[in-house]
Length: 199
Image (tube, helix red, strand yellow):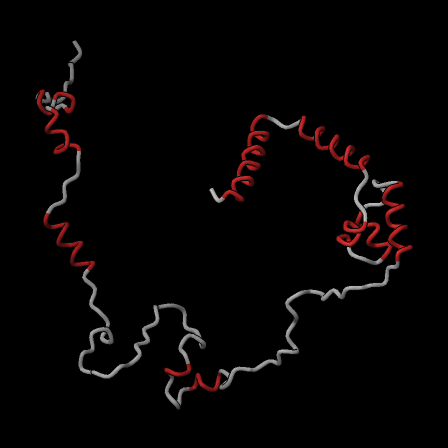
């Protein structure tokens, strides 16, 4: 006959699902004791630097207390170095001054306005633009006549035919949009309209 091995019986009050609700926080939650509080407080108690609480000096002075980091020659300002310090010889005494003229300009290239087009050139621009607006765009005309695209836009306007073609292209692109993109574009348009109303 085989022997049945059984473990020690647990009392029914020690089972967690049989405990009353008010003891849940005591059994399952963590509790901080006085010993752990004292240990944490002792570790957080850091002694201040000697330069922080110097009440002996009454005059105004500068306290330079850099954080601990890798040593660098340029870390300590020259003003705080002693006169016989070796680090003074490792850096220039005065900053190098540059001429304002030698510095690069704010813009990459300064564009000068040109007034070289005569009325016959303007008529030719309008003629080419009306003949084939898809071929002769503003940028191509500006490149041919050596002027800016803004000037071409002021001189002549795109034909109704090109506007219709651009409208058809835009409608073809918008027909492939999904509901999310269409809603996002409508929201963007509403936001742009709200900019002027200051809402």
